[in-house]
Amino acid sequence: LLNRLNFNWDPHAGPGPEKWLKNYQHLKDFKAKYGHVKVPLKYAENKLGSWLKTQITQYRNAKEGRQPCLSEERIRLLEEIGVCWGEKRITTPWEARFEDLIQYKERFGHANVPWQWN
Image (cartoon, rainbow, N blue to C red; front, side, top):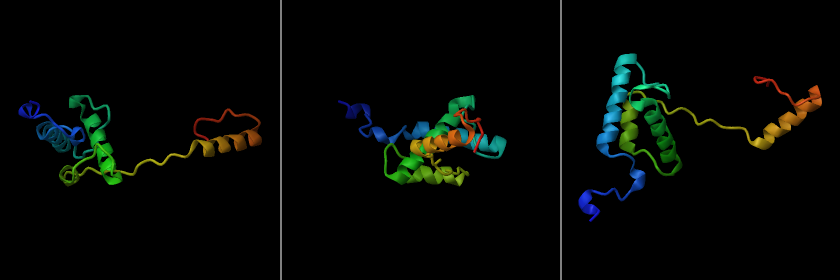
């Protein structure tokens, strides 16, 4: 019965091709209008920034062998119009930052670290 409804048996496949291609076209239109594809996350029109962020996450998943991931075809299409995947931010482990805080307190006598102190 579900097959007759074209049920998607692979939940990791992402949106169907029509929906994905519609968003891809929105991205191409954005590039034509602004000359780049660096869509702000809070871009109000058609949630394009959020969609692009999802594509970047799924690209990274593909490179790390995780699901859901972006297909090679979709990666190619996005790269053709200039999407740069960027580097994944590497965060400092909590323990290392705690050690930094201990050293700061020893040096200054308190743990009220200014916002942009390094």
